[in-house]
Length: 135
Picture 1 (cartoon, rainbow, N blue to C red):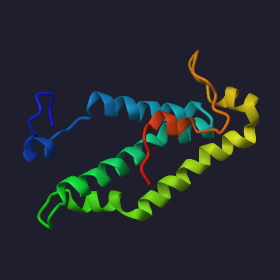
Picture 2: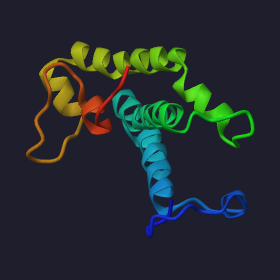
Picture 3: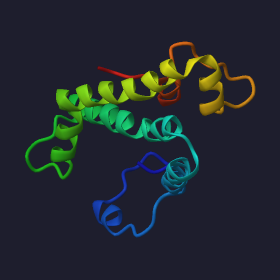
Picture 4: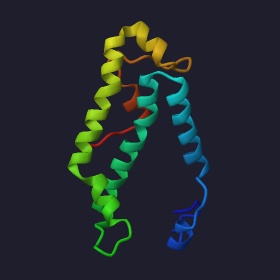
């Protein structure tokens, strides 16, 4: 949907030749994290993407119930698949495990949080940034 709440025509979506500003900024942030950050920073930069797609897939599967002719049926079913939920949960363990092994000083060093944002003792920074997670 666009900002006025109407759907974009499929033809317009198919011919889009550039990324939206938010998508461009996300990919630049991810590439910067891969190039200049720690493994933990990279994993945290990547983490919101599969979680967002998973949540969208679950909601669309419930709300739209796509028929065979739906242009995004395969995408919706893939991201709503319980196996993808398992993969997302396993992915969550990666930065959590790095944070646990790093200890508080390591988390403060490797997870450079803005002033005023606490370092979580359980290493769940990525999940907090990603928002609500459904199983």
